[in-house]
Length: 458
Image 1 (cartoon, rainbow, N blue to C red):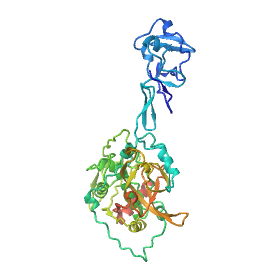
Image 2 (tube, rainbow, N blue to C red):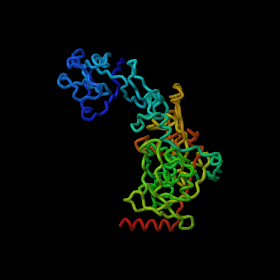
Image 3 (cartoon, rainbow, N blue to C red):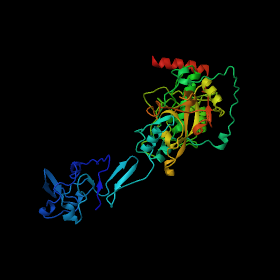
Image 4 (cartoon, helix red, strand yellow):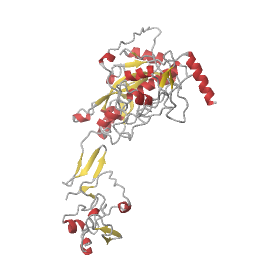
């Protein structure tokens, strides 16, 4: 029988009762030529917990059950009972068909005595990370534990989740902006969080839920409502409310469209994240949780919740709405002016295999995977929130322009959940489809909101 050397990171499964005893031959068989089952006078069929012989400072078994992944067989069991060579020879050898996981690939101890491993491209490829960090690409890469063990396919399938807009939507008229060169001086650096402190929301984590369509829409709407209400209302809007309730032609955690999300925000509205918290899917593909928030019209397009918050500790089930979204031009100056005047915008972008390992710097898609087979080069569509811009001076006097954008992969990814990406060259198509929207807020809303929240907190 084939024999495999010890796999890296080898973890043996846990056992109960007899299964809880440690395997006997992890360090190779001691006393491999001793006579045990033979001396006992025979072997036992099936499982027989009494079919034992004293062995060193413990016991070993001569029943067929002993010959499983975790072996407690006597050293001569294979030769005497089965008439085959023992599978453990020397130190750290593993029995046939035993498995371990090497990053995202399952390795099995095969007949040949070699580990046979799956050949999938992993989301965290150590050589890709090294190649980025060795090269002069202007950004650095890191290995993220939350992505380790996933295949690149799974990353594309579960961590993005924005569908490309249909041709009709792509043909949406861009708003005409009159740029006045005198008054519209755009500074070299701008960050929404500095102009509107306390009103720009932290990046969230979509987990293995392909719903960036809901996360980016909710994030932009949250910031815009906070800015527009001058901080009277600073809701962190609920992506889960969109994922579970905006189901018309939307796929929840299996992907969706931002135009559908904005339609829902305008016509139905959503509550806050605290009222309707995000529940990352436990299994994949994810099921869309039942919608737990309904609202009714109270006239003039406004809505009111008719259900309590799914989070029973929260009583604020106010519904927030937006006005129709508008598309910006692909001109970087117009996008910059919009952010500076009105707040963060939403952008659709193509995510390539190397974006997942981004840690810091100004991202540009690299060619580090170009020499590898095609399965190592994949991309999918994602949506993010652009909150500002800047430029970095190079040693040679030239400068590199960038956007500052918030992702939805948690705060330990990238630069505290944000990333910088080359600006003005449509890198990864980030300038091809950019959206702005206003909250639907009246002075009356601001007044009521301010008072009734203050009253409830007293």
